[in-house]
Length: 225
Image (cartoon, rainbow, N blue to C red; front, side, top):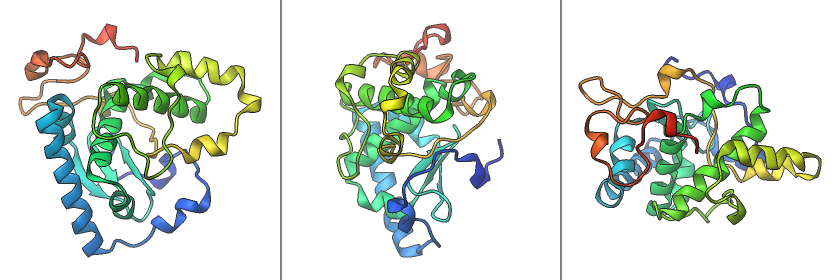
């Protein structure tokens, strides 16, 4: 995938309450947002080194003109500067962790023929529950954020199946409004973190990632969260 993302690749549609965040970049707001992003990454490096290490590998790219919140293609961290300034620094740590786990859990490749929106909702339930349980940053409360305790510890596939059982009763628009990032399409090559030597350090646990003690780095066949 190119580092320049087509706006059409963001499949999720939110209500218009986030529309006001999209627009031309304000350089002053962006500078403040980047400072908050950098501070959050440093915080992760100090308190959650696995997440901090992978978060620092993402290039920060302003996406004010098309993204209302944040997004990743596995290599870049796209952000809306106005959205970042709405969050507390530790909530931004949580946001970084959220994007990292989407990549580590290989959510794009695992979707298969499932409904994209329900699959993305299931992914967010999985990721947010894991981050909350492992105390990564601070769970986001400044804006609505998907979480249900009954989904803690469950895989995206399990949550998806549960959601589909009651899909006619779900308020899909409300659930979409609780998603804190934009989900993008991509391919397998985008879903790998590389160290300077070119070794994959996330999904295949090569290089320095083998020393990680958090439990998030495991052999690829075992990843099913």
